[in-house]
Amino acid sequence: MKRTYKITGLLIVLLIIGSIFGYREYNDPFNRIKRNGVLKVGMTGDYLPVSFYNEGTGTYTGFDVELIEIMADELGVKTEYVKTSWPTLMEDTLSGKFDLAICGITITEDRKQKALMSDGYLDNGKTILIRKEDVDKYKTLEDINKKEVTVMENPGGTNEKFVRANLPEVTLIIHESNAEIPHLIAEGEADVMITEILEAGYYVQIEDRLAAPLINEPFTHGELGILMPKGYERLLKYTNEFIEKEKENGTIDMLANKYIYH
Picture 1 (cartoon, helix red, strand yellow):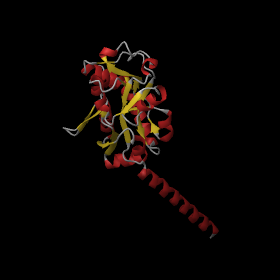
Picture 2 (tube, rainbow, N blue to C red; picture 1 turned 90 degrees about the horizontal axis):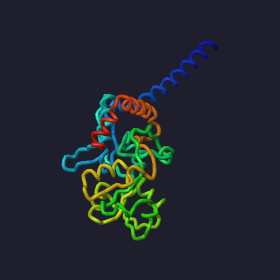
Picture 3 (cartoon, rainbow, N blue to C red; picture 1 turned 60 degrees about the horizontal axis):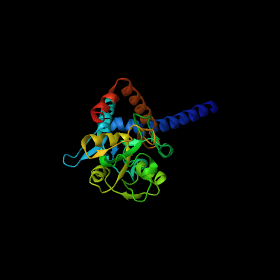
Picture 4 (cartoon, one colour; picture 1 turned 135 degrees about the vertical axis):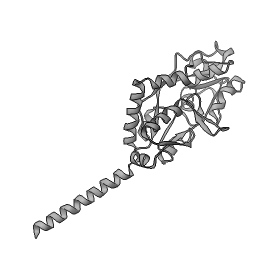
């Protein structure tokens, strides 16, 4: 009789463990995404050439858009884009508003502490975007860090943080739309935009009045990564394997030539 009790008790424990494991497996974000057939992607849509939202067509375009579409296709799911912003990016990520965010997000220690970040898939760094007529005026941070110099940035991102940390003397204007700032610089509404070399390189190709004289000597060196909430470790593993594969097979270089270096 005692042996029967022991066997019954063991079966109950195993059933409980199995139920817990099954529940966790069923509710794991990676399994949920595959089961539902939808990958929810957070995007600011204001960072050419990697992420841009066209209000006329209601679609997103850019390097990051095509990259994540390739990943979703290989995962066997469709993408559903969710609008976010730089000031709310981390909050939206942690609240589960989407499964991951990809829109020109620089990998930082702060972001890695609060959430999960993939391996880097594209090199980047801080530089300046200015009017072509001012190329001889701004060659160093010291040249920029003056009260009479107006710097314009979008709120909440690493560009604003860089200005506040390294250019405390400038007159800083915060403008809500990141995509509008290069045009405003060209129009003379501000003197300098601190931005990433990818964005600066894109805008000097499409706007003759702009220049990025320090694009080959960035103030910082970093990489873009994909952001997701903690608890998404299996999706992170899949994402890192995907990034490594696309680097090796040349897809990353192909997209860079298509959207950035054309």
